[in-house]
Length: 564
Image 1 (tube, rainbow, N blue to C red):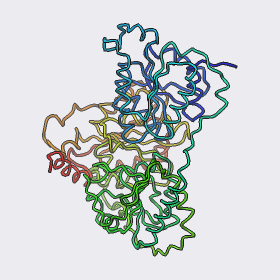
Image 2 (tube, rainbow, N blue to C red):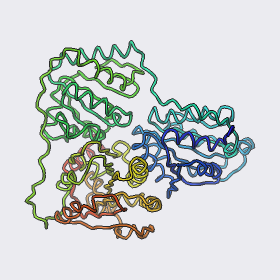
Image 3 (cartoon, helix red, strand yellow):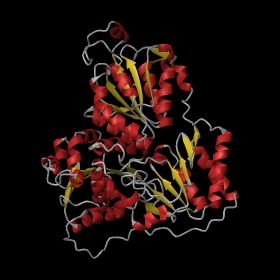
Image 4 (spheres, rainbow, N blue to C red):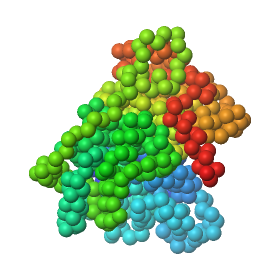
């Protein structure tokens, strides 16, 4: 094969970087492109139920596999996806958004085509996406098409942000040299400026040598920009107390002897709050300091000795080092510290939460505080746990993750219903890695109503997620912020256990649990512990029951919204 069609070239390149499932919907400007996907062995078209769900699913897939690809049609399709794309941009998730656009001849003639604004402007949607993309490209020259596709894939992976790639409908079958596929896309990071990197490392070592009570805090970008190993190595070599933020949960092995828990400002456990805020040196890795990630900005450090590690810069106290990437700095620190004659005496770390009281009667109604701590017993190494914005994303902070557990929660962007789409993409990705890997969703009954159709896609592909529905009869997180009795925080009740057959499932399991005993019986069942089928579990909870941290956050959020 000396030549290859442009459309197939795109899918061969995606396959080479480990992307095997493509999300999106068909539309007349991308149909010929989708034909080419079926020519590549090992590739599949998810066939999502709408573009917003596809964007959420692509986000979930990328958080597991490193990047993803979504294809939409011009105008109506791409705009429907943009809320999800904005979330991926906000939270550093690499999604390649490919858009089939009208042919170059149609654009040149400014034809009054469907899916346009009727004004002859074919660039307006591209311009909209440019504000929430790391980079963009609309292919206009076949001679540079391959290099543009490669550039867009590399940017998506390396920068962990969405990238927009528009391809005119008359370009999909144009021919490219097949030999271009023989050279892999370079996904490696460019080296740091050595002098700047060494200056950072030397200054950090100096600060460590002077510190008596240093700590490490790991946040979301430690996961997104692939420095989990370097973070773990830094904890091992220093023995400093280590903490996660809510968005960073799962970055650090929670069974590590130096792991101290979740720090979330004033909402932290008192002993965690004291340990973090009394530190005289803070090594902050991959921070994203949003309101829900910081207890409404209630961080209260006593020290100005702060080192911030980021994907594209370092900050040491008030000095910023542009372009110095944290991955290489962390690697050099881990190599340097053993020979740096550091005299550090490990200090005690906060004790983990005690286990639930085993003497609680089986007839006791389920409540959130008990549920999230008890969940620790059901999880196993390698699980992927997805929690929706609301009671779930706050409650999961009380759960102890086994090693190598991935937590997915959209804490910063916080789009209600995100998890209902993300679970689809994460389950596709998990199946590609290991068919036995479990994906476990916790979503509220209100949130589910926004993205419930994506259950259909998972049934279509015989995927086996656990779908835990927290039924507290409405938007509890909103009720805690404002309007506990307001009609706008109410929803129409659904018969959740009928949803799987409604979407065509024939092999499935459904359960409804409302007591401690029913939870224990279900989660201790050996067959239930295996991801052998799709399952929906409805958890019945009191309307205003919520994790203590969310109750406190609700009060802070109402004050913040009022400008206090």
